[in-house]
Image 1 (cartoon, protein in one colour):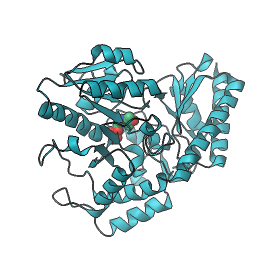
Image 2 (tube, rainbow, N blue to C red):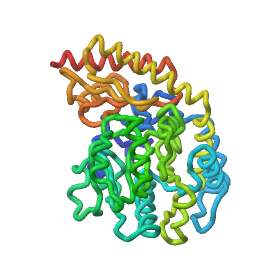
Image 3 (tube, rainbow, N blue to C red):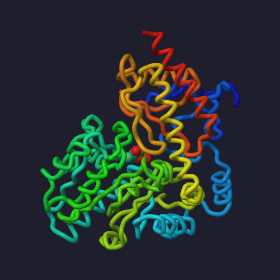
Image 4 (tube, helix red, strand yellow):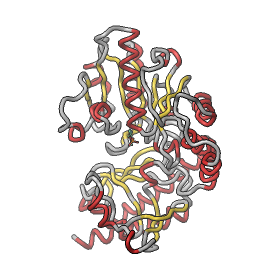
Length: 406
Ligand SMILES: *Cc1c(COP(=O)(O)O)cnc(C)c1O
């Protein structure tokens, strides 16, 4: 790189829309669960690109799939179909409740499609007033105006003018609160089986089963946003598989492409049928490059040994965090499923997640938060023990550094 073209973290503030506050270093290379920055400094990656890098950085099978596809067909649009998309749809159908698939490029787009489908189904099959969507406090569904309005954090949805109407938010895991607002005008109940951005909170089995019954009673659709909890993250292929019930619509993204942008909305044939050519669409959705990588990722993730490994790794993290907690008293609770883990901060660490993330980076650890008071761990589903051990050493140093600053 010539000096003239050199970019630094300072360049970010000069050229980018200031909606993020990225870390001080710029990653340039990744391998497995390690990353290197512009200066050659090495980091352990407990963030996994926010639950995207299910197979770590630069997995050889994903590289091979991307290379092979890039030499045959990149894009054809949805005026034509393509083999990788059809094959990935077949796999998703074979291994889930679903009978029909729609591909898009991001979680928000898959959710946008899901909410439009739920509304359209209710209006087409039932009556024009069946438009109410019930969603949950602290839920997160993406940043388009519809998805951010269904999300349960008003601060993200305010300030953009009129919002889509008839969306009601109630407390998560509170079935009575749902019962109080549920009626025959309800078209959908929307939730993350494990809330991610909202603080890593898993739905209780009684709540999930109760929602299924309520939806059946009122002919409403049950929509699971598994953008974060899906594709092996929870220790099952999808988190709903732990609850003995099925949704009517499910969305998945993040880990689906292992780092290549792709998302999918899954549903049943009867529901899909209300959509006809022209009802909805996207230019890139289901593009051959994304689906080729998705196929390679799916084959690796949908493997009993890999999924068992996720639960084994959950224990590595839980044990290490408990042990740190006995030294530092840093956590009020350690929770979550599989490799979607939250450590709620306590004592002097309370509400200090942002500061801790900065300190962690200085100690060579890429870490996430979920709100101000929860540290979030969403590493590669195949992270090695040595990487977990080294990352936990750096987390211990981080907690110790913070304590010394007080
Ligand atoms: C990340 C996320 C989204 C949004 O996905 P994008 O790809 O950023 O649009 C939606 N729902 C959940 C549960 C998520 O974690």
